[in-house]
Image (cartoon, rainbow, N blue to C red; front, side, top):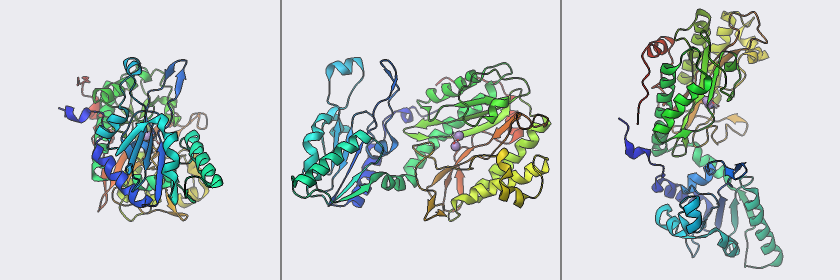
Length: 449
Ligand code: GLY
Ligand code: MN
Ligand code: MN
């Protein structure tokens, strides 16, 4: 039975307070940092997309409403942490939804002082005054950023407001370096996202039948996500047959035929943290000989890559491990000719494996953080979370007579680097072909929450 107390949407305020304290140390007593929540986006006419703030803003504040600005100003007389947000509004709250208002921002979100968003203009000059260095986002919310820079220019050119900052720093790389290493509390959240994502994939394996539509299988996954109080972290990919060879296929509109493999790439988001799993399995419950031959190559690549993921290893060691197994397999089954080294040097494998093996995973599915430092692949460290997702795709257009035509396979797990190696967060959903077939043979019963 799932713990219902874990299904609440509110983030833990202590997490955000600790992050702001770390940022305040970097910003220093002579600096100030400012970040805005990204704007709402219109879908059509008077319908907006459900709001989800930019991850950097959520990471620092836990505040989930649009039209908000956070300021970290260590030693500022009104408080180190100021939050500007929408004022309470009785009518809007009847029609649209509740608002924290400045009162709630202080009571529930840890702001030292909070004000209505319209008051930011009244505070900006005071916030810049006397600070040597301004940390500002660049490209996250251009309108907000431009308005801050306009104030800064005016202060500097008119000599108003004392001593405005003379040094500008881009805030995102500072936050991204922080976000790259996950704390134990963050890893615990990611385990929740991974567990629900894994349960959803297992449910899909049990529910699939020839003749079902891809969107119906997506619905099985989404039912599991929503039953756990979650939502997808990125649009779900369900591609059967040739659709499995389209990497980011999200139409999910075709019927799935007896004999097809279906590739599902789907993950749930839990309190802002993403799961990202891909599994590939036969629509009729049994892998054909050709499907299994290719599947076992991708599985071996997935396992070799996970084996290579350990602290101190360069990030691309994971990809290299997968690549060697995939290329050796492609040669073995006759899809590539020549030697492994030549195929890798010439990149002839890219006809079948055209993406990387890993990306950082966190609040964004393709999470932030540099992959290279000074041109060198960065070394993996405990707390870094990444995906391992080798794949092979044999497009019928390019391989019309191949017995592997229309087979697309990806096997994607989420791993966290530990002190000694790595921990697979997504181990709950089977990936061994025999285990998948055994699970698929069990009847599907949708779990009610
Ligand atoms: N779901 C997107 C990816 O695997 O990169
Ligand atoms: Mn991925
Ligand atoms: Mn994925």
